[in-house]
Image (tube, rainbow, N blue to C red; front, side, top):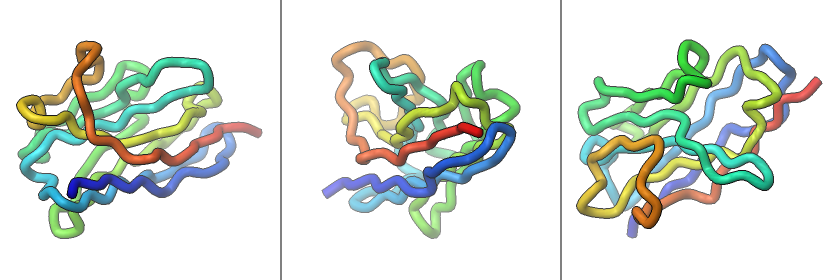
Amino acid sequence: QLQLVESGGGLVQPGGSLRLSCRASGITIHSFAITWFRQAPGKEPDGVSCIRMSGRSTVYADSVKDRFTISRDSAKNTVYLQMNSLKPEDTAVYFCATARAPYSAICALNPPKGRSYYRGQGTPVTVSS
């Protein structure tokens, strides 16, 4: 059974850093595209970053480019999101997800409505002084 478990969230001051982890079980991550989404209170989820099967191809939302870095460790079946220079507007619940077949290898930060995903429970990130 496919499971995704996030960790690493917390409270950080503006300008600080956090590293989120997404540990997968039931799949081998190099066969899938894994996307980090975030959802602020009262808002729809937004795609933040995605890493494709090879691990060499990554996609970032404009709002996090040059601040966030996505990576994977195949040996640990884990995808990471390194977040630097955090801003209050980065506050949200962050969760990782992978699309169900036949879209499991596709990176889409703004997927069509109705596309089904496996996702984790999420980890909260609060950026505040």
